[in-house]
Length: 84
Image (cartoon, rainbow, N blue to C red; front, side):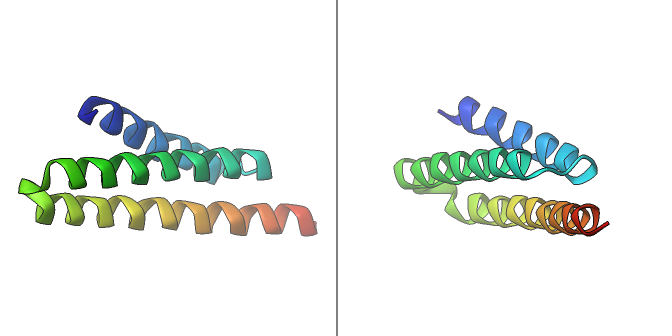
């Protein structure tokens, strides 16, 4: 499960960066889905392996901050391209 979580989280970061430069509504929805799967698997891992919960939470917060910034930028670029 840890390998699945790391792969999905890594792909999510890369895909969100792609969406930042090439925004579209369907791509944003896919990126949201990837983040949801990452969060769900992260919660599952934190629940089943609670020994490293502090490190897990800090890493998760950094991940969410980076992805949120990418989403804000993508939504802003998408709004600008629609209004042109």
